Length: 201
Image 1 (cartoon, rainbow, N blue to C red):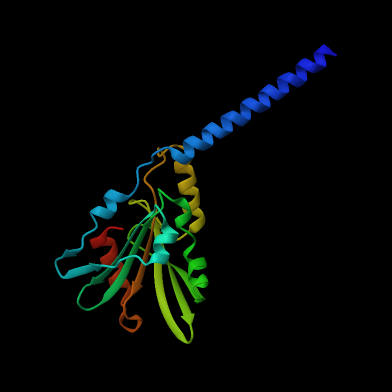
Image 2 (image 1 turned 90 degrees about the vertical axis):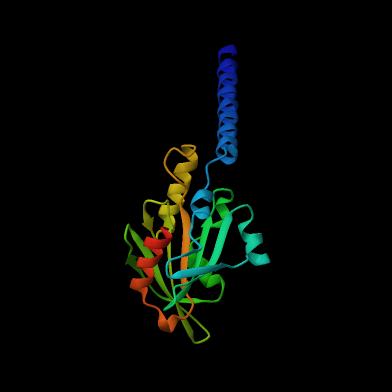
């Protein structure tokens, strides 16, 4: 009888210890101050040879969605073509970044075509959208400053692994969205070359 009680007591202690350990690890993962992508956003050029830009303030809705996440919206003018450039860093709010396809659909757009598009290092995701008879194309990718890809699942894995390793697995991947100012004048190859080489995202 006493042997049974001691086994039960030991099992309860082990269970309690495992629970406490899980809570401690969870708190460390949640509140450990990981380095964010702010230096990369800060060094993003706003003007240069043959181009200029203008920052676009976040709307109240965007501020509410992003919370503590960093987000930069900018309009770039390269003379022959212009585009909107958005970067979102979810280090301080990992729930701020969703699969862009869900966001497009949530805004009333229908995704009518999508495909991978090669970038200088990696790939992006080209999406053709339609809403009320109007069509637009958007290019997005996730980048840690070294590799680029258009997979939301891979992004989630990268950010999870980064939190599990307390940042040792690499830099924080950010979401980059490129949208032409005028869809009928876009030269995607030229635009992609400019974004990757000049803006380095």
